[in-house]
Length: 59
Length: 245
Length: 222
Image (cartoon, rainbow over all chains, first blue to last red; front, side, top):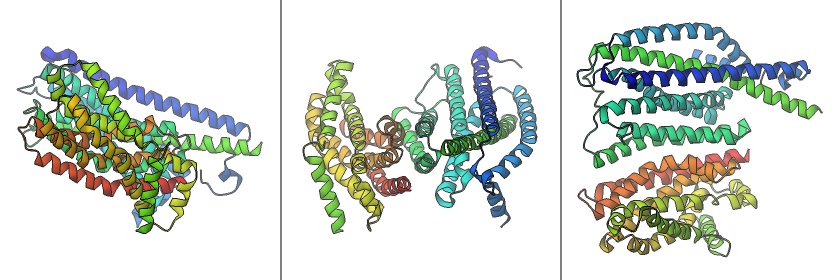
């Protein structure tokens, strides 16, 4: 595979795409860990959701 | 009937989370496989006789453009779910889709501009297709701004739904007017693809990449929806905490 | 019908009294358009060429900024709640308010357009066409902006958010408005097609705007 005279533009396009996708994945996973941590914190302090306090499982 | 049952089942966030957790590993594996296969096919796709190797940018640009539009379409369908059926997950889906759709629109713009540099000689041309995507990007940014400024998810849910529907009605009009404006100001654009003239040796990798991008979109959407559900849980628990003190 | 007329007259009276700010839009338009030559230089040929575009951008910004207050004052003093609870369909109420707003803000703006056109070296004979394109196009701006005004009042955020939400939606109006004005001045394309499309856009937003704005307002009441 040869990329011809405009190789830098092709490579740049792929790099930008990879960076955007990876940073999005990283952001989502970090957000997930953060939410999990806060939830665990709150649960440890004995706080329950309305649904857990009274039966039924609606958020 | 079965479809409605599935929808009602999904309306329960706890059950949705359980289902998501079960689906995620398979979806991740499938996405990776299709993506790797797609990139392999792209690497061995022949060069275009006119554009040379730069045609390889198309395999990113065109799927990203499709997903940029699909993202708004998804938000519009979810908006219907919010306004008409008050489906609790509809707003979660719309809110999770907005940043992902914006990211794919951004990819489409950047790759389009990097493709334009060797083809047109400048990074940006007010070409009809690029300009429509730019307006779509602006609409996505507006949607994100709306979500950022409203703290209360219940308050912003229907506002965002209305904006999504108005945008969905407007996008074809914008597309049409930008096309019209473009033909008025410049004779023809350099990149003329689409139609029936694409060779299978290019079309097949393109379709595989489109499938891979779609799977990636769905994967990110599910992950982000999971975050959004947890975030709402945190919010309601904090309110319980505040109320109990 | 009588009630709608009363509402229309009420809004117009409120806007034209002291503190109503009806002429603010026209004033802003005048100031913005006068600023342009300072940015691009006093080259009369250049000004004549971009004159219609400058006038349209000015009109767009002026009608958008004025819309910010369309529901806000009614929301502050509680009359918006009464309007939503009345027996009139909210869509019609909202449309009447928008028409009143157009009459008090957009119309003065169009009236002073020929004067500004003179300053921008736009040909006098073509000035009529520019004003005509504004008459046909500004209702679309008002009715699209109506959606933004309703959204921003329910979100309790105004100003910039509304501009960010509404401006991309006005792209078609801007394109066809400037195209119609330019067709009249420089040609060679005929004035008819862009002008009729502009009218179509105004009529379509006359239908879409009130419905979307009413839906947004109802949500704010819940």
